[in-house]
Length: 291
Image (cartoon, rainbow, N blue to C red; front, side, top):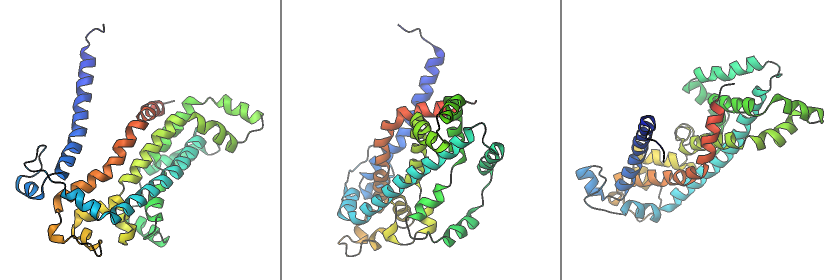
């Protein structure tokens, strides 16, 4: 039988309260989405609503074309962006972890510099608009594809602490170049940190709504988050995007439908996160060790 520990009790209490703080908004979001519109307007948000209603979900499924298209765009963007982003971040982190890389300090400084400074919104918008990404899938993928310096530092630290330089030397003596070492040794050994960084990048792509706001005006190219942002800004966008719909604007549950779309957008993350949690905990701890 384990002895009672005040330290463990405090840690468990803090973690328990943190979990409650994280879960409560999700529960409130879901309960609000199944609350009758009149009750929401009259009483506000509540965990146990006075009157339940599935009108918001009924509206979404009766007019599911836009929602499914937005889901498809978000899934494609998240898959492509995550795979490419992980490869770029991993390759840069591996290069910076190699002790004899020429100009290693300079490259490390450039990466760290981007943690503190960036070009600003207007120059960034002008640059990407000039590249012709507006109203294309690239509008979601390319601006977020720029390598995140924090992820690179995590990746570099993981490789520097987990793979001894002697392993690289032995591989080079057997005739392997750095590309072969990277694809046949570094990537298989880095599964925990790859899963962790992959989760970071996937969340970034899935939750991103700013790129859609800046670069996408075609309603057929809305991602799920952009679609939600448009609803929050003006619920009339839902009706205007449903050409030929039998649902009238007056019948639209304006408040609860926002909650329903937000919960539907959140649902895949609630399913995927527990599957990656073990890699996430291991990868973030190993990547955070300074060496």
